[in-house]
Image (cartoon, rainbow, N blue to C red; front, side, top):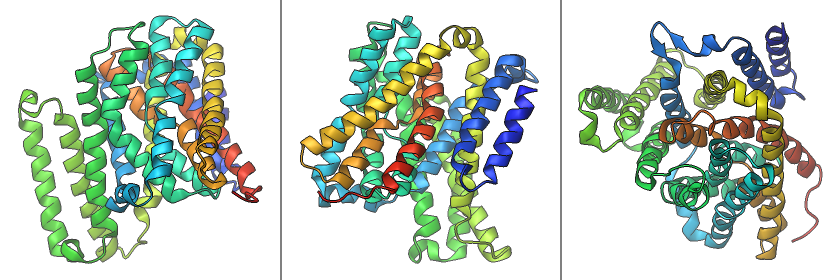
Length: 389
């Protein structure tokens, strides 16, 4: 009955303009309730363990993130480097240290504590760009910070985990770095190619024939990579398979919608949030089903830690930026980027690299909460434009 009520509430909120931004959180609650009440639903289907879907789903989410980026977002660092540098320092200083401090404060068991440090050591997520847009902050800076922190994550996340979480569990720096490249960087780069194909206008992708041939080549490459031994690709096999396949599928879909159905040009922007939210809900359901007893035991404490982690990220990120002479608008942008993390990446690392559903609990709780707090913060700042620098 609880699941039915939550699903009904989520559907109704999706249709309500004022409550729409909170519908995703209610969907998460519905999946958590379903996983706690019926964990077998998120276990094995026809002999296939659903935990094997987590990495491909995260790769699809990261591909979607890549389609929102362009080369200009990275080039902007060279044009206006100081705010990005300040934001990057805050991103990889504030959240990891706050996360580590919270593990000492709450005294979590080792695997759960490692998950708290992990979510703090992750880069910013694409949700922060949406929150900064709603808050009327510096969206260009937000997108650039997300892009640069993501590119830095193969080095920074394993390094911070080794330094701060190494006391809790064994951390393999090289394996984590390769897994981040496979789960995050390769799909994001594929998304950049898709962005060029979707929104680049003229050039090579200006002709339908070129798009079709290119996409056919991508699908063929995906099949060839899938047939190769995993050892030949240095741990990047699944990322390459998903990346090539998604570029091909998006390209063919673009041709169909543009030339056959004469649909809207922003179809990708409409589809991405739905796909991402569905993927995250399923991932959270799978994790919850595998750690239901741990969640019942430490759920409230972990929720409190996640709320504190997120709020301290906003506060310290803002005042760190102001202390280094950034404007109020840029400081607000940095605050959101620091406080909101890439929960999908942290979940994938916990399950795939650390092999721990317990370590995935903190990212699974942090992710939905940050969307709630981010929406509240965006509404507050939107109604209070800065009076000066």
